[in-house]
Image (cartoon, rainbow, N blue to C red; front, side):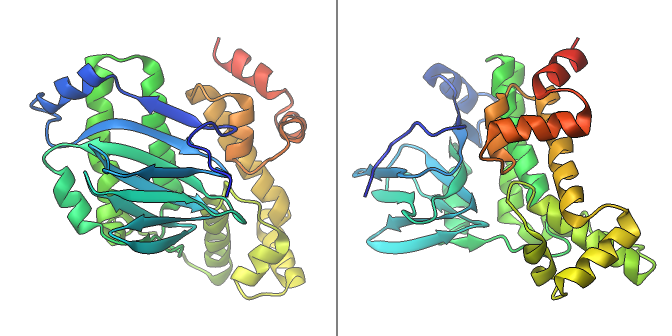
Length: 298
């Protein structure tokens, strides 16, 4: 097995300095739950970590694509896509990416008075299933927002925002059903509108993946031709064309509101070839990703 401890194409990695963490642990607003570090490793081939004495923080690892595994208390767990786990403090552990289907993970190290309770509540590998009310994309988007906050500078305001925001993020893992129910969609009046709502929601929840017409039609148990015809009738775009437009709209948001590099955005949204991504972006938006960022940030 190839073993890599860090260094993946498109990765994001942010760490608060030691003194910042210590100050946050003594700050009345943040002492209960403090972020030490957080990041995203896309398609982390060869990712492997072993800590013989555990870690001084709890660790949350959220697998959004691919597959991985971890070992805790001599028990081996597999971690498929849309699953997460929390490692408790100071307990020996190992974890890594699948050789055949490397995982993409969002992760964070955290500590504070709440940390032991959180690790007790979130034991084992926990599924975040995709359904008509799931908010997978909302959760990932907020994770990205917290990652982006580190780029604003290590000020008291930023540190407090990240740590207070992390309370919201961790609640979405602790109380998955409530996180969904507070944004339950209602008032859909007819079958066609309901179908389109489900289809576009499914696309948004899988915006970082490569979906084909077969994937989409199979999920809804329709033939490819029927699914394509129904979607085109209501939206006036083919399903795949709509999905690509959705990706490019998200790319535009990331270009304007984050400091992510263009190749990082490309990989995040499921484009392995950044040149293809740039050509598609220009075709839809009329300008290159670089020009779009420069023009709209003036």
